[in-house]
Image (cartoon, rainbow, N blue to C red; front, side, top):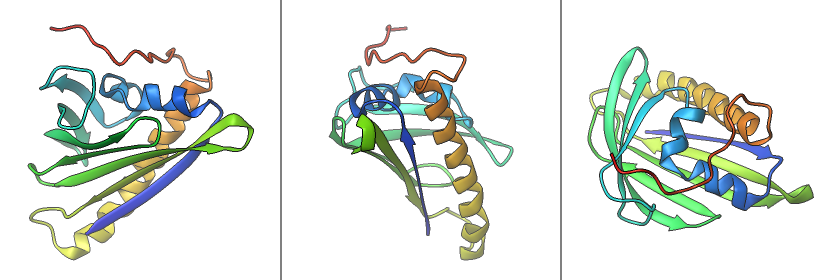
Length: 159
């Protein structure tokens, strides 16, 4: 079992951080491993929504579908995938921090299929590093230090 938690304080109000981070279309902008996102259900995001992600991790291309199982806008988002080599649950939480800022927590839990328990000991630190880097990128984007302006619209064009 792997259970990795990271957090960051972002100098933006919680609703702004939620609007950007909870929009799956924005994932490639702040998750270094996510290369593509495709909605399998129509937006906007809701419990039951399904979104396909294409990612690179440990030199491998991974394709998986997350189903959104809990959504409390501005507070909590939970998504799960059951297929692939690493069934995972990802939880985002947002809470108010001093100064009107936002504390965002990112948690990934799962059991790597086909891996020994020892492999989880190796994977967890790699995930933690990647997650810290991703939250740092999100922080930079939302605080205006990044090269890409935040897109907070949760609607997307049909393709």
